[in-house]
Image: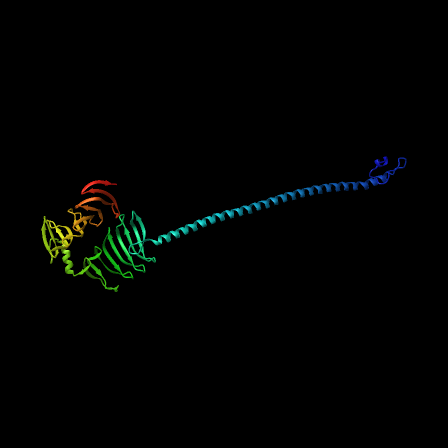
Length: 381
Protein backbone atom coordinates (compact mmCIF):
# COMPACT_ATOMS: atom_id res chain seq x y z
CA UNK A 1 0.00 0.00 0.00
CA UNK A 2 1.27 3.39 -1.03
CA UNK A 3 0.99 6.63 0.71
CA UNK A 4 -1.69 7.67 -1.73
CA UNK A 5 -3.78 4.59 -0.83
CA UNK A 6 -3.55 5.38 2.85
CA UNK A 7 -4.63 8.88 2.16
CA UNK A 8 -7.97 7.96 0.54
CA UNK A 9 -8.91 4.30 0.99
CA UNK A 10 -12.52 4.85 -0.06
CA UNK A 11 -11.67 6.57 -3.28
CA UNK A 12 -11.45 4.41 -6.32
CA UNK A 13 -9.62 6.93 -8.34
CA UNK A 14 -6.09 7.53 -7.38
CA UNK A 15 -5.68 10.60 -5.29
CA UNK A 16 -4.24 13.63 -6.93
CA UNK A 17 -0.77 14.21 -6.57
CA UNK A 18 0.22 16.79 -4.07
CA UNK A 19 1.50 19.07 -6.71
CA UNK A 20 -1.79 18.82 -8.65
CA UNK A 21 -4.59 21.25 -8.13
CA UNK A 22 -7.17 19.78 -5.85
CA UNK A 23 -10.84 19.84 -6.85
CA UNK A 24 -12.36 19.98 -3.46
CA UNK A 25 -15.87 20.09 -4.64
CA UNK A 26 -15.47 17.00 -6.71
CA UNK A 27 -13.90 15.21 -3.80
CA UNK A 28 -16.80 16.15 -1.56
CA UNK A 29 -19.29 14.77 -4.09
CA UNK A 30 -17.41 11.53 -4.28
CA UNK A 31 -17.30 11.35 -0.53
CA UNK A 32 -21.06 11.97 -0.30
CA UNK A 33 -21.70 9.32 -2.93
CA UNK A 34 -19.51 6.87 -1.08
CA UNK A 35 -20.94 7.56 2.38
CA UNK A 36 -24.40 5.95 1.80
CA UNK A 37 -22.74 2.85 0.51
CA UNK A 38 -20.80 2.67 3.71
CA UNK A 39 -23.99 3.03 5.80
CA UNK A 40 -25.72 0.38 3.73
CA UNK A 41 -22.79 -1.91 4.30
CA UNK A 42 -23.02 -1.29 7.98
CA UNK A 43 -26.78 -1.92 7.90
CA UNK A 44 -26.15 -5.10 5.95
CA UNK A 45 -23.68 -6.28 8.54
CA UNK A 46 -26.10 -5.49 11.31
CA UNK A 47 -28.85 -7.32 9.50
CA UNK A 48 -26.63 -10.32 8.91
CA UNK A 49 -25.69 -10.31 12.57
CA UNK A 50 -29.36 -10.18 13.61
CA UNK A 51 -30.23 -12.98 11.20
CA UNK A 52 -27.36 -14.98 12.55
CA UNK A 53 -28.64 -14.46 16.07
CA UNK A 54 -32.17 -15.42 14.97
CA UNK A 55 -30.86 -18.51 13.26
CA UNK A 56 -29.00 -19.48 16.43
CA UNK A 57 -32.17 -18.87 18.48
CA UNK A 58 -34.26 -20.96 16.06
CA UNK A 59 -31.68 -23.71 16.21
CA UNK A 60 -31.72 -23.72 20.03
CA UNK A 61 -35.48 -23.72 20.07
CA UNK A 62 -35.59 -26.64 17.65
CA UNK A 63 -33.17 -28.52 19.84
CA UNK A 64 -35.40 -27.90 22.91
CA UNK A 65 -38.46 -29.03 20.98
CA UNK A 66 -36.66 -32.17 19.85
CA UNK A 67 -35.59 -32.94 23.42
CA UNK A 68 -39.13 -32.35 24.70
CA UNK A 69 -40.54 -34.57 21.96
CA UNK A 70 -38.03 -37.27 22.79
CA UNK A 71 -38.96 -37.05 26.47
CA UNK A 72 -42.65 -37.37 25.59
CA UNK A 73 -41.93 -40.40 23.46
CA UNK A 74 -39.87 -41.90 26.28
CA UNK A 75 -42.76 -41.35 28.73
CA UNK A 76 -45.18 -42.94 26.29
CA UNK A 77 -42.94 -45.98 25.98
CA UNK A 78 -42.66 -46.22 29.76
CA UNK A 79 -46.45 -45.99 30.13
CA UNK A 80 -46.98 -48.65 27.47
CA UNK A 81 -44.45 -50.95 29.14
CA UNK A 82 -46.07 -50.30 32.56
CA UNK A 83 -49.56 -51.01 31.22
CA UNK A 84 -48.29 -54.20 29.61
CA UNK A 85 -46.75 -55.44 32.84
CA UNK A 86 -49.88 -54.46 34.81
CA UNK A 87 -51.95 -56.44 32.32
CA UNK A 88 -49.66 -59.45 32.77
CA UNK A 89 -49.87 -59.10 36.57
CA UNK A 90 -53.66 -58.82 36.63
CA UNK A 91 -53.91 -61.72 34.21
CA UNK A 92 -51.83 -63.88 36.55
CA UNK A 93 -53.94 -62.84 39.55
CA UNK A 94 -57.20 -63.45 37.65
CA UNK A 95 -55.99 -66.85 36.50
CA UNK A 96 -54.95 -67.74 40.04
CA UNK A 97 -58.38 -66.74 41.37
CA UNK A 98 -60.09 -68.68 38.59
CA UNK A 99 -58.05 -71.83 39.21
CA UNK A 100 -58.67 -71.63 42.96
CA UNK A 101 -62.40 -71.24 42.39
CA UNK A 102 -62.36 -74.09 39.89
CA UNK A 103 -60.46 -76.34 42.28
CA UNK A 104 -62.87 -75.44 45.07
CA UNK A 105 -65.82 -76.20 42.80
CA UNK A 106 -64.27 -79.52 41.82
CA UNK A 107 -63.58 -80.35 45.46
CA UNK A 108 -67.11 -79.42 46.46
CA UNK A 109 -68.50 -81.45 43.59
CA UNK A 110 -66.32 -84.37 44.63
CA UNK A 111 -67.47 -83.96 48.24
CA UNK A 112 -71.10 -83.86 47.11
CA UNK A 113 -70.57 -86.96 45.00
CA UNK A 114 -68.96 -88.68 47.96
CA UNK A 115 -71.74 -87.46 50.23
CA UNK A 116 -74.39 -88.59 47.75
CA UNK A 117 -73.38 -92.15 48.46
CA UNK A 118 -74.64 -91.82 52.06
CA UNK A 119 -74.47 -94.57 54.63
CA UNK A 120 -76.11 -97.82 53.55
CA UNK A 121 -78.81 -98.92 55.98
CA UNK A 122 -80.10 -102.38 56.87
CA UNK A 123 -83.20 -101.77 54.75
CA UNK A 124 -81.08 -100.91 51.68
CA UNK A 125 -81.65 -97.15 51.88
CA UNK A 126 -78.91 -94.53 52.05
CA UNK A 127 -78.76 -92.26 55.10
CA UNK A 128 -77.45 -88.69 55.17
CA UNK A 129 -76.73 -87.05 58.52
CA UNK A 130 -74.32 -86.72 61.42
CA UNK A 131 -73.02 -89.49 63.65
CA UNK A 132 -71.43 -89.18 67.09
CA UNK A 133 -69.91 -92.12 68.89
CA UNK A 134 -71.50 -94.44 66.37
CA UNK A 135 -75.02 -93.02 66.96
CA UNK A 136 -77.18 -90.95 64.66
CA UNK A 137 -77.82 -87.43 65.98
CA UNK A 138 -79.87 -84.55 64.63
CA UNK A 139 -81.84 -84.64 61.39
CA UNK A 140 -81.30 -87.50 58.91
CA UNK A 141 -82.60 -87.99 55.37
CA UNK A 142 -82.97 -91.48 53.91
CA UNK A 143 -83.00 -91.96 50.14
CA UNK A 144 -83.31 -94.80 47.68
CA UNK A 145 -80.43 -95.95 45.48
CA UNK A 146 -81.58 -93.57 42.71
CA UNK A 147 -81.72 -90.56 45.08
CA UNK A 148 -85.47 -90.36 45.85
CA UNK A 149 -86.20 -89.08 49.35
CA UNK A 150 -88.01 -91.81 51.30
CA UNK A 151 -88.17 -90.54 54.87
CA UNK A 152 -86.81 -87.98 57.35
CA UNK A 153 -86.05 -88.72 61.00
CA UNK A 154 -84.67 -86.84 64.02
CA UNK A 155 -82.43 -88.35 66.69
CA UNK A 156 -81.32 -87.24 70.16
CA UNK A 157 -77.79 -87.53 71.56
CA UNK A 158 -78.45 -91.20 72.38
CA UNK A 159 -79.52 -92.11 68.86
CA UNK A 160 -83.22 -92.35 69.81
CA UNK A 161 -85.98 -91.03 67.56
CA UNK A 162 -87.55 -87.77 68.70
CA UNK A 163 -90.14 -85.26 67.48
CA UNK A 164 -91.36 -86.72 64.19
CA UNK A 165 -90.75 -89.25 61.43
CA UNK A 166 -91.83 -88.27 57.92
CA UNK A 167 -92.38 -90.79 55.11
CA UNK A 168 -92.72 -89.49 51.54
CA UNK A 169 -94.42 -90.46 48.31
CA UNK A 170 -92.22 -90.55 45.15
CA UNK A 171 -93.75 -87.21 44.15
CA UNK A 172 -92.34 -85.60 47.32
CA UNK A 173 -95.61 -85.26 49.25
CA UNK A 174 -95.82 -86.56 52.81
CA UNK A 175 -97.29 -90.03 53.10
CA UNK A 176 -97.03 -90.57 56.87
CA UNK A 177 -96.22 -88.31 59.79
CA UNK A 178 -95.36 -90.14 63.00
CA UNK A 179 -95.00 -88.20 66.26
CA UNK A 180 -92.34 -89.62 68.55
CA UNK A 181 -91.29 -89.12 72.17
CA UNK A 182 -87.79 -90.41 72.87
CA UNK A 183 -87.86 -93.55 70.79
CA UNK A 184 -91.60 -94.28 71.14
CA UNK A 185 -94.12 -93.49 68.43
CA UNK A 186 -97.14 -91.84 70.02
CA UNK A 187 -99.41 -91.04 67.08
CA UNK A 188 -99.71 -91.30 63.33
CA UNK A 189 -101.17 -89.27 60.47
CA UNK A 190 -101.57 -90.67 56.97
CA UNK A 191 -102.06 -88.59 53.81
CA UNK A 192 -103.07 -89.25 50.22
CA UNK A 193 -100.71 -88.60 47.32
CA UNK A 194 -102.44 -85.26 46.81
CA UNK A 195 -101.72 -84.21 50.40
CA UNK A 196 -105.16 -84.80 51.99
CA UNK A 197 -105.25 -86.17 55.55
CA UNK A 198 -106.80 -89.66 55.38
CA UNK A 199 -106.51 -90.96 58.95
CA UNK A 200 -105.02 -90.16 62.33
CA UNK A 201 -104.77 -91.81 65.71
CA UNK A 202 -102.54 -92.97 68.56
CA UNK A 203 -100.01 -95.82 68.61
CA UNK A 204 -98.86 -98.38 71.12
CA UNK A 205 -95.74 -100.38 70.34
CA UNK A 206 -95.96 -98.88 66.82
CA UNK A 207 -99.44 -100.39 66.38
CA UNK A 208 -102.78 -98.54 66.13
CA UNK A 209 -104.30 -98.32 69.57
CA UNK A 210 -107.36 -96.48 70.79
CA UNK A 211 -109.68 -94.16 68.86
CA UNK A 212 -108.87 -93.38 65.20
CA UNK A 213 -110.38 -90.99 62.68
CA UNK A 214 -110.22 -92.06 59.03
CA UNK A 215 -111.76 -91.55 55.61
CA UNK A 216 -112.81 -94.20 53.12
CA UNK A 217 -109.90 -95.34 50.92
CA UNK A 218 -109.37 -93.25 47.76
CA UNK A 219 -112.03 -90.76 48.84
CA UNK A 220 -110.28 -87.52 49.73
CA UNK A 221 -113.56 -85.66 50.19
CA UNK A 222 -115.27 -88.30 52.35
CA UNK A 223 -116.13 -87.51 55.95
CA UNK A 224 -114.13 -88.98 58.81
CA UNK A 225 -115.46 -92.00 60.66
CA UNK A 226 -114.36 -93.33 64.06
CA UNK A 227 -112.64 -96.71 64.32
CA UNK A 228 -111.28 -98.34 67.50
CA UNK A 229 -108.10 -100.39 67.79
CA UNK A 230 -106.67 -102.57 70.54
CA UNK A 231 -102.92 -103.01 70.03
CA UNK A 232 -103.28 -103.15 66.25
CA UNK A 233 -106.57 -105.09 66.15
CA UNK A 234 -109.79 -103.38 65.21
CA UNK A 235 -112.36 -103.77 67.98
CA UNK A 236 -115.88 -102.59 68.66
CA UNK A 237 -116.67 -99.51 70.69
CA UNK A 238 -117.88 -101.74 73.55
CA UNK A 239 -114.56 -103.56 73.75
CA UNK A 240 -112.69 -100.27 73.59
CA UNK A 241 -114.83 -98.78 76.37
CA UNK A 242 -114.14 -101.85 78.50
CA UNK A 243 -110.40 -101.34 78.05
CA UNK A 244 -110.64 -97.65 78.84
CA UNK A 245 -112.67 -98.37 81.96
CA UNK A 246 -110.12 -100.96 83.01
CA UNK A 247 -107.42 -98.31 82.81
CA UNK A 248 -109.55 -95.80 84.70
CA UNK A 249 -110.75 -98.42 87.23
CA UNK A 250 -108.04 -101.08 87.29
CA UNK A 251 -109.74 -103.01 90.11
CA UNK A 252 -112.75 -103.82 87.93
CA UNK A 253 -112.76 -107.37 86.63
CA UNK A 254 -114.05 -107.71 83.08
CA UNK A 255 -115.39 -110.65 81.14
CA UNK A 256 -112.84 -113.47 80.86
CA UNK A 257 -110.57 -112.01 83.49
CA UNK A 258 -109.57 -113.46 86.85
CA UNK A 259 -108.46 -111.80 90.06
CA UNK A 260 -105.76 -113.04 92.40
CA UNK A 261 -104.45 -111.59 95.67
CA UNK A 262 -100.76 -111.73 96.63
CA UNK A 263 -98.78 -109.79 99.27
CA UNK A 264 -101.28 -106.97 99.51
CA UNK A 265 -101.62 -106.56 95.74
CA UNK A 266 -104.43 -107.57 93.42
CA UNK A 267 -103.54 -109.20 90.10
CA UNK A 268 -106.19 -109.01 87.35
CA UNK A 269 -105.94 -110.63 83.92
CA UNK A 270 -106.65 -113.62 81.74
CA UNK A 271 -105.32 -117.16 81.81
CA UNK A 272 -104.53 -119.68 79.15
CA UNK A 273 -104.16 -123.35 80.04
CA UNK A 274 -104.50 -122.24 83.63
CA UNK A 275 -101.44 -119.99 83.34
CA UNK A 276 -101.28 -116.23 83.32
CA UNK A 277 -101.23 -114.95 79.75
CA UNK A 278 -101.21 -111.51 78.19
CA UNK A 279 -101.27 -108.27 80.18
CA UNK A 280 -102.10 -108.44 83.89
CA UNK A 281 -102.83 -105.37 86.01
CA UNK A 282 -101.33 -105.06 89.47
CA UNK A 283 -103.37 -102.88 91.86
CA UNK A 284 -102.36 -101.80 95.36
CA UNK A 285 -104.61 -101.65 98.43
CA UNK A 286 -105.68 -98.08 97.57
CA UNK A 287 -106.94 -99.14 94.16
CA UNK A 288 -104.07 -97.47 92.27
CA UNK A 289 -102.58 -99.16 89.25
CA UNK A 290 -98.99 -100.05 90.09
CA UNK A 291 -97.86 -102.29 87.27
CA UNK A 292 -98.85 -103.86 83.94
CA UNK A 293 -97.08 -107.18 83.44
CA UNK A 294 -96.97 -109.22 80.23
CA UNK A 295 -97.02 -113.00 80.73
CA UNK A 296 -96.31 -115.86 78.36
CA UNK A 297 -97.12 -119.35 79.65
CA UNK A 298 -97.21 -118.05 83.18
CA UNK A 299 -93.82 -116.24 83.22
CA UNK A 300 -92.93 -112.60 82.68
CA UNK A 301 -91.65 -111.94 79.18
CA UNK A 302 -90.94 -108.81 77.17
CA UNK A 303 -92.01 -105.28 78.04
CA UNK A 304 -93.68 -104.47 81.37
CA UNK A 305 -94.78 -101.12 82.74
CA UNK A 306 -94.27 -100.16 86.38
CA UNK A 307 -95.74 -96.93 87.80
CA UNK A 308 -94.02 -94.83 90.43
CA UNK A 309 -95.57 -94.59 93.89
CA UNK A 310 -95.25 -90.84 93.56
CA UNK A 311 -97.96 -88.76 91.93
CA UNK A 312 -95.61 -87.17 89.40
CA UNK A 313 -96.65 -89.53 86.58
CA UNK A 314 -93.25 -91.21 86.17
CA UNK A 315 -93.07 -94.83 85.14
CA UNK A 316 -90.54 -97.49 84.20
CA UNK A 317 -90.53 -99.77 81.19
CA UNK A 318 -88.94 -103.04 82.33
CA UNK A 319 -87.69 -105.77 80.01
CA UNK A 320 -87.98 -109.41 81.19
CA UNK A 321 -86.52 -112.52 79.62
CA UNK A 322 -87.55 -115.90 80.95
CA UNK A 323 -88.96 -114.24 84.06
CA UNK A 324 -85.64 -112.45 84.76
CA UNK A 325 -85.48 -108.64 84.88
CA UNK A 326 -82.84 -107.56 82.34
CA UNK A 327 -83.05 -103.78 81.94
CA UNK A 328 -85.22 -100.76 82.57
CA UNK A 329 -85.94 -97.21 81.40
CA UNK A 330 -87.67 -94.50 83.45
CA UNK A 331 -89.86 -91.85 81.81
CA UNK A 332 -91.65 -88.75 83.06
CA UNK A 333 -95.30 -87.90 82.36
CA UNK A 334 -94.26 -86.22 79.08
CA UNK A 335 -92.70 -89.55 78.06
CA UNK A 336 -89.17 -88.11 78.16
CA UNK A 337 -86.55 -90.60 79.24
CA UNK A 338 -85.10 -89.95 82.71
CA UNK A 339 -82.71 -92.86 83.22
CA UNK A 340 -81.77 -96.24 81.81
CA UNK A 341 -79.58 -99.18 82.71
CA UNK A 342 -79.38 -102.90 83.47
CA UNK A 343 -80.46 -105.11 86.38
CA UNK A 344 -78.93 -108.06 88.13
CA UNK A 345 -80.87 -110.02 90.75
CA UNK A 346 -83.62 -107.39 90.43
CA UNK A 347 -81.18 -104.63 91.45
CA UNK A 348 -79.43 -101.90 89.49
CA UNK A 349 -76.08 -103.09 88.29
CA UNK A 350 -73.40 -101.59 86.06
CA UNK A 351 -73.59 -98.16 84.41
CA UNK A 352 -76.87 -96.22 84.63
CA UNK A 353 -77.37 -93.04 82.63
CA UNK A 354 -79.42 -90.20 84.11
CA UNK A 355 -80.89 -87.50 81.85
CA UNK A 356 -81.47 -83.92 82.99
CA UNK A 357 -83.55 -81.61 80.80
CA UNK A 358 -83.14 -77.85 80.65
CA UNK A 359 -86.26 -75.71 80.46
CA UNK A 360 -87.94 -75.78 77.01
CA UNK A 361 -85.40 -78.28 75.69
CA UNK A 362 -85.83 -81.85 74.45
CA UNK A 363 -82.10 -82.54 74.46
CA UNK A 364 -80.93 -83.76 77.89
CA UNK A 365 -77.61 -83.62 79.67
CA UNK A 366 -76.21 -87.01 80.60
CA UNK A 367 -74.74 -88.12 83.90
CA UNK A 368 -73.47 -91.64 84.50
CA UNK A 369 -73.48 -93.58 87.76
CA UNK A 370 -72.02 -97.02 88.42
CA UNK A 371 -73.94 -99.50 90.62
CA UNK A 372 -73.02 -102.82 92.14
CA UNK A 373 -76.12 -104.88 93.00
CA UNK A 374 -78.13 -101.80 93.89
CA UNK A 375 -75.37 -99.91 95.69
CA UNK A 376 -73.96 -96.73 94.18
CA UNK A 377 -70.24 -97.17 93.53
CA UNK A 378 -69.10 -94.14 91.54
CA UNK A 379 -70.47 -91.06 89.83
CA UNK A 380 -68.89 -90.13 86.54
CA UNK A 381 -68.57 -86.62 85.06
